[in-house]
Length: 288
Image 1 (cartoon, one colour):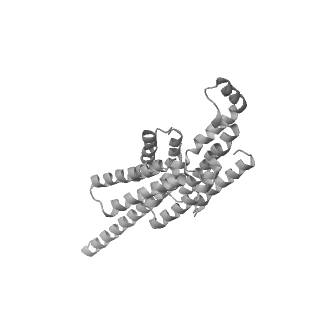
Image 2 (image 1 turned 90 degrees about the vertical axis):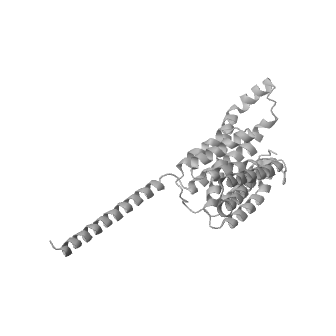
Image 3 (image 1 turned 60 degrees about the vertical axis):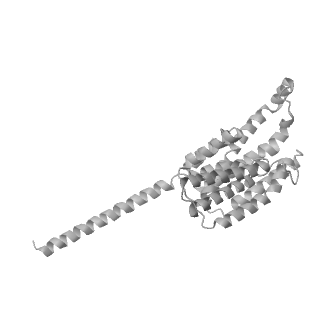
């Protein structure tokens, strides 16, 4: 066999190997894509969060008022017995719905953090969320207190907005200005404490989101660890009963990283709208 024929055979073999390698890579990529598509998308997470928000608002605005639960003297055994005889079943349903209503907060916090990290229009996202957080305050106050403005508590979106601002500042400094690991974590701690303090001054739920969302941002490479640390921080800092919030780990664990159906401003509109609807129902039922 001549040298020319040998070279031709080698070229042919190399080409066959390249084709086989390309085929294997393509098949592997398709297999990974199929795996990736299993589970639920961001669209499904948003739907779960919206249902959860409805449960929470219904319990706080309608069911507790309907039972007049907040005025019950738990030290009066006769009053408690009479209450349980009349509303025992309703109270059980209320507690289950309230339990499920806690899922929304960690899911929304996680989606906001990951959405911001991967966004190409970060400033626009912050401005839009600020607008809806401010707009939602009146519907929230009406639903929770029957008043147009109530300073003793603010809506969840305002809390999430504070958390988003804290994440945005740290993300900017980490990406463009800081290289030292010590400096990065020091800045993250200072920014988080600052926004937590601002939230606490404003009362209500506001101080929680900056801490939770910063945990999610710092440990964003592992979604379950980031959410678990965020929820744990709620207990250690605020002594909240975090068991219901851990339920959010189930849908987040199933999240495949895909956007799914485009929702536009669906979630932004839904939050104040569902509060207004539930407020109107409560007014019709004469619960205020």
